[in-house]
Amino acid sequence: MKYLIFDAGPIISLAMNGMLPVIEKLKEVFPGEFIMTPNVKKEIIDRPMKIKKYKLEAIQVRDMLERGIFKMSTDFIPQDKLDKEVKRLIKVTNGVLRTTQTGEKINIIHDGEAACLAFASLCKCDSAIVIDERTTRMLTEAPKSLERMMEKKLHTPIDAQLSLLDELKGFRFIRSAELLFVAYKKGLIHVKKSKDLLDALLYSVKFKGCAISSKEIEEMKRLA
Amino acid sequence: MKEAGNILRILRKTKQFIEEDNAFELKGLSNQTIHSATISQDADNIIIAVLVYSLGKVLERDHYRNMEGWTEFYSSVTKNLTLAIKALEKDNLDHTRIYLGRIRNSLNRISGDLGRYIKDVFKKAEINKAFKLYEHGLSTEKTAELLGVSLWDMASYIGQSHIGDAKVAISMPVKERIKIAEDLFG
Image 1 (cartoon, each protein chain N blue to C red):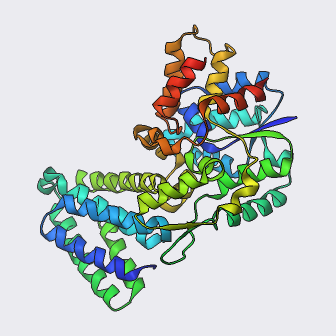
Image 2 (image 1 turned 180 degrees about the vertical axis):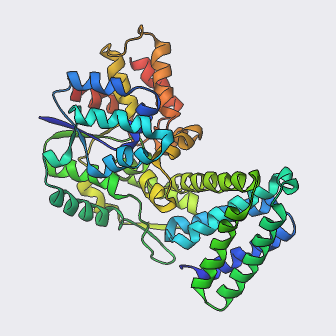
Image 3 (image 1 turned 60 degrees about the horizontal axis):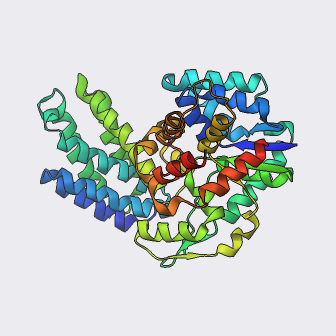
C-alpha cells in the first residue's frame, strides 16, 4: 500500500485554481491512499468554513473527504501516537538552528508540517509528502542551504547542528506542480494536451504559493 | 516581552518618524523588527512589526488625512505611542501592551470609511509580515500561526512574490522529484 500525505499548501493551491477534480482523477490511478492529518483538516476545512472568501473551497474539500478521496490519518495511525511523534519531530527540527550570539533556538516548522512527517515516519510504508512550501523540504533535503539563507536574511551568524536531521533524510517530497505534471502526462486533464497547457498548469500553482521556480517549470516542460 | 530594549528603541524611532511624517523610514524600521521577530517569535515583536508597517502605509496615503476621523486616529496614535514608551521605560509591560492595543482599537470608534480602510491596511500588514517571516526561513504554517492569518490568504501573497525563484530554494533537481512522483503513480 502506498500513501501520499498531503500538507495544506498543495490542496489550497489546487483548490484556488479550481483543480480539485484533478486530485480525484489522480486518486483513481493511485495504488494507495491520499492522507490528510487532523492539523491539515483544520487549516483547509474547519478554519476556512468560517471565512466566507474560502468557504466554497472548504466545502469542496470536505466533500472529497466524505467521499473517501482523502482518508484521515487516524484511520491508519492512532492520534495519540501521531501526536507523540509530532512532538518528537518538532523537538528535533526546531533544535537544529540557533543564533551564534545568544544561542536562542529558532523554531522553524509547525505541527501541521510535522504531522505529515510524523505520519510518513510511523507508517513505515512506501510514501511521499505533498508539500508546496520550501522550508520543510529544505530542512530535510538541503539543510545547509536553509542555514545559509537564514544567516543572510537575519544578518546574524547561525550555529547549525545538522546531524540532528540525519533521521529525516529518508522522507520524499513532491509538490502540487509534480501532481499536475503526472496528471498532464497521464491525460487526466480534460483539455487538449499541449505545452501551453502544462505551462499554464504549473504557473497556476506557482501563483498560489507552490515554491517552484520559473527555471524548474521550463525544465518540466522539456521533460514532458 | 523579549528584547524590551530593542522594542523601546523601535517605539521611540516610530514616534520620531511619525512626527517627521516619514513613511519611508517607518517601513524600513518595520523590516528591522522582522529580523528579531523571526528569531524570538515573540508576540510583542510581531505586533510591533505589524503596527509600524501599517502606520508607514497609512502615512504614505495622503488622501486619508482629509477623511472624517483622521484627527482622532492620528491623535490616538501619538498619544498611545507616547504612553507605551513611558510604560516600557518603567518596565511596565502590561501597560505597554494596553496602549499599543488602543491604537488599533481606536479604529472601531472612527465612523465613515477611514476606519474600514485602515483596518484593511492592518490586515494586509499582517499577511505581509507573515510572508516576510516565511521569506526569512520559517515555514508557512509557523508564520500563519504567529500572525494569526489564514494559509489561504498567504498562498496568493507568496505566489505573487519571487520567493520560489530563488536558487537556494531548489533543494532537489527537477528530474529527481518528477521521478519520485512518476514512481508513486506507476
